[in-house]
Image (tube, rainbow, N blue to C red; front, side):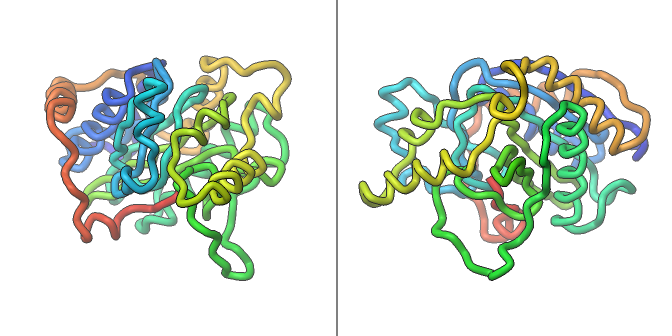
Length: 281
């Protein structure tokens, strides 16, 4: 594949299992040299909880609440923690390894994509943007099952709060980065789907989630529209990653893989695969 060729896919709201199957199919095809670098923008047709590829759903997720509230649980092909997708723009960026516009290491590629997100949000008019860095004191916070409870290295913040959650998966010949940009949210609903070891931990979990999260509705006048946000992301990513961009759908091969992934269960993650995940969501 020509490294200067980029494919743009704008899908709008889709079913959660379908969304994850499409991203995985593009990654697999790109890994085999059968798909170009691709930016895919999409939404969710109903509230859906995704969990990281190696996340323990029995430990972290309140399945009873999910069933009671009719919230489907879908496992992502990237790492990270649980995230309720509802009012958001989701992007997936898939590119071959190596690629002339990305550093050869995992963190470097993560940073390059984060810069494209920053550019997109700046064009949208979001103020006080920054890329999160490592804790200067080197301390680790108690791990929460929720993606937006803390901002990890290379994630996007605005006004000191987390605005975009991200996670990456690398294969031998390609990588996939997922990102979620909150247009708005329902923190109580998102929090109610998670499992905590005690009531005190649950109360503190909600406080941390609310105090550390920001949405586009919090920083922009009026309620942002999905299509408007998507248009700025197209502009921002095209500005960051130069080349020949073409709006084009899935290939026949990718469509066949999507069908296979929807029919098959997700395999258990091996220890070798775990080393290739960035746990950022």
